[in-house]
Length: 179
Image 1 (cartoon, helix red, strand yellow):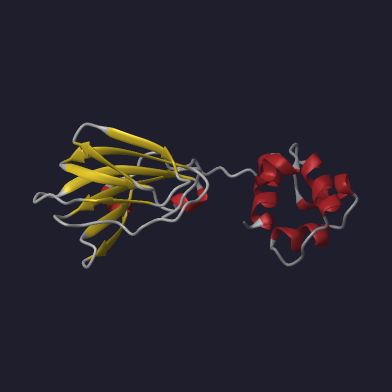
Image 2: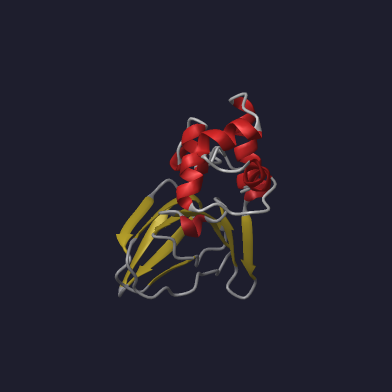
């Protein structure tokens, strides 16, 4: 973030000259000029005084105007293919590791499987879009067919396999992000 550029923009929005802002803040016109050109860094106290004179505060000044992305398209996805394991992971949300959940589109080819995941904190949910899969959870194995879902606490070893001749697709959500 360019602090100086934002200060200058606020000063102009308030129809103030550098000299008028300097007088109101008891700073020199030269300091205001250097601040606006990012040639100096103000202390927090000085920046707070400047922002008060410009009708704002630190919270508003540093608040991001960037609207978070809500809709993601296929070109936003990140893909990882493991030919040996016969699976393809598509991360549906970029940088999902910083979020509370991590949705993935998993494609398992015939005979494919995911890596065995060790027990961890969190929960996992899946919805089978196409085909059927086997969910290996601890010593139990569950068959989950197209249109069915699964949900479990991830406190046991777990992985998914596709012993069928047709490929399978699963929306898989892990919280917290784990992949």
